[in-house]
Picture 1 (cartoon, rainbow, N blue to C red):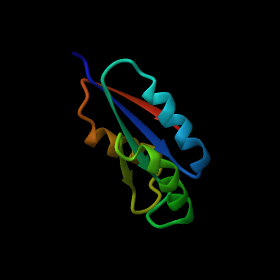
Picture 2 (cartoon, rainbow, N blue to C red):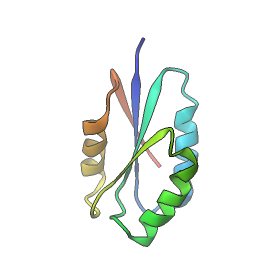
Picture 3 (cartoon, one colour):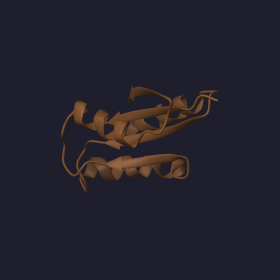
Picture 4 (cartoon, rainbow, N blue to C red):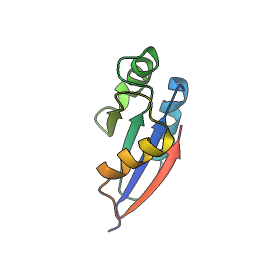
Length: 92
């Protein structure tokens, strides 16, 4: 069976991350969800994003960039962790 990796990048939008995760969870194919937080470790935005992800923590891999590196870096970081036969990207 096909396995899909869904990589969600986020930056300065903690209020949108839960919605993006819920959307990804609606997929009917077997999948994994990887969230890459590009706010920088221990910033107020990263802490707010982490709070929003907490209810999904058992179902989502959460990666935090040490500093803001931009969307390409974040997508590539998620790609490195992906295990799927297919990979798709979703911005928050």
